[in-house]
Image 1 (cartoon, helix red, strand yellow):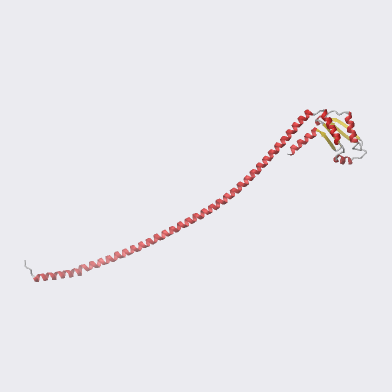
Image 2 (cartoon, one colour):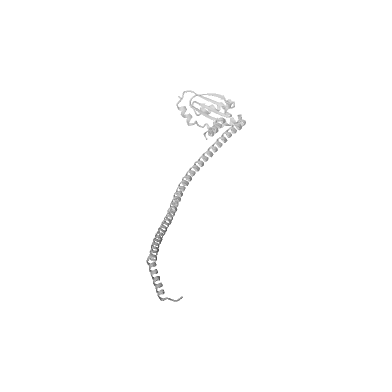
Length: 248
């Protein structure tokens, strides 16, 4: 095959014409389409970046808000704990005060109950003592004891008691006084004379004596002069113990 210069130049011219046609009809639309596509992709990437930034901002805001909520929650919980602690202290203080009052009432009631039990025991002891003393005195009583009580009565009658004197002041000096003498054992004539002489030395009025034996006296004498009564008997003394026991 021989090289033909004219054909070679024609081929070059055809090639250049093809290049121009391709550049004019094919490469430029493709390049323009690629440029528009690139611009669309860049725009999409820009929007995606903007959305990413907005999402990050929203995330940051959410995290900040969540952190703020956490702080507010912790502050609310701390405030609630403080309120609960104050309320608990208030309730405990009130309960302690009520408990102290109940303890004081219980101690007072117990002390009162102990005092009542102690008084009942004392009263029972006095009553038992009175019964025991009455039993002993009834067994030990006799004419000898009554004689000693008679001597004691005469020795104590140095003057009449004030109550007897006041009762006699209302009686006329000429009026005869009736004196009743009760005794547990038979009284002798000598004892009657001594007793009447003793009263005659104390009272100016005329007197009439009545003697009566009363075994309830146990031993001793009971003398009635008008509204006044003189006791020198064991039954009256034992009754005093009984009255003391009842007064407790």
